[in-house]
Image 1 (cartoon, helix red, strand yellow):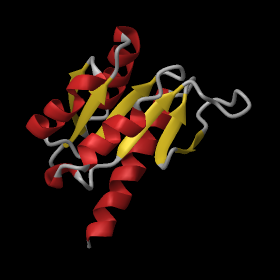
Image 2 (image 1 turned 180 degrees about the vertical axis):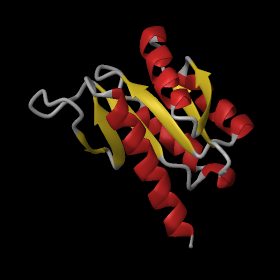
Image 3 (image 1 turned 30 degrees about the vertical axis):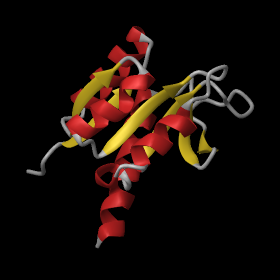
Image 4 (image 1 turned 45 degrees about the vertical axis):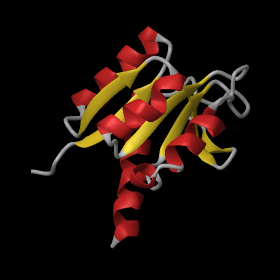
Length: 131
């Protein structure tokens, strides 16, 4: 049995946070820590040492760049992938995955199963890149 991966979930929306956390926990592959404020992301990441950081980005307050820059400036966190959940969707398609400002994003609305699979793929790529 493999060790569960650690995911730091940064989201100000309690309903979305609960749904995302439930889906990830139900997979049995992850341990989740939640943080409601992006200003607290660096401290939470340093304390929790996540394998992946999942950030909900509001289009009008696109702060992913700043959060990711602060996190990746820390040697202990420099290789931690950041996945952005955002309502910036291409043509309104469900589950659109792409890159935004150099970071992987998953456009909302999305299927929870697709999000879990996306996270699994990102972590698999991270693991194979180390070997």
